Amino acid sequence: MVELAEKVRFLSDPAAYAGATRRVEPRETHMSWVFLTDRRVYKLKKPLRRPFLDFTTIDRRRHFCEEELRLNRRLAPTTYLSIVALRADAGGLSLGGDGEIVDWLVEMERLPQDDMLDARIAADKVARGDVDRIGSLLAGFYAGLPPQRADGGAAIEHFVSEHEVTREILERDDFGLGERVRQVIRRVGAGIVSLSPAMERRIAEGRIVEGHGDLRPEHVSLSQPPQIIDCLEFSRALRMVDPYDEVNHLGLECDLLGAGWIRPVLLLALERRLGGRPEPELMALYGGFRMLLRARLCLAHLLDVPVRKPEKWRPLALAYIALAERETLSLEGRAGR
Image (cartoon, rainbow, N blue to C red):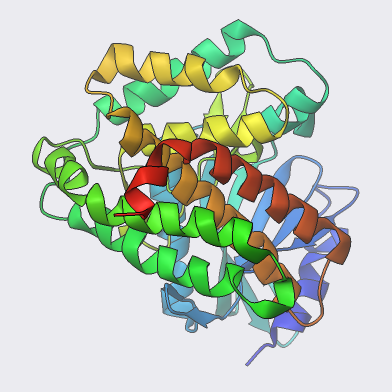
């Protein structure tokens, strides 16, 4: 049994990569360790079990590495390269080579950080043509996906179950968010109930597909050609989405970064290719639900031990809540029904 800490130490050493890099930058996320070398990125999944994932065995981690490769090649075919065995023998750990397999990693091309959409927005270097290319890529992606009528109900179940967890987190007394956030939570909760028939119609119409699951600016590269990375590989249910919901979420994340003009451009590209844009109140529900979910995920970081970047999460959560409030104004009447 090779402990995670030993694997991280090995993979953080440039010598592990047989002279292919001069430096390694390790980064820890909730579910993985990511190792950035000069030209490649290697992702090691932590041996975790959560309600929505199970990475506790080598076989399961291999399976989800394979899924990550398969699913992400849909939108980033030149970025996701292979899965690599981490092996151990009497001489220690090695990538490839001989010895017992003790884990698996996803190997990727390293994309230039300056080309990621969030970085381009911060530098004020996003042109209309860049967004048109992203919109065209996404519209073509969704148009080519088969309808998920049988599994589309997972999208509604996701809204119901996740909103209840969101409510529990955001209404915690120790966060002290007050009545203002409770009002937005009520609007979204009422919208989920009253607009469920509209969501069911979209399932019946074949509008729900197996999408990306985590479409955000930091996952969009404006390289040539554009690449969209970091699909949610561990839960098919979380990938059951209305394309308008997913693209609207990306647009709202851009809005949060100060580029509100991007959202209508993306939605227009989607509408031109797919048609069938949801009614305004359903779009409001989509936006409010996603922004409250993002606020919850921010505040959940404050419950970690130890808390990383404690100064970051509350202000960011408040910004998401403000967007949710703005998005759901049209749902106010439903909350009183």
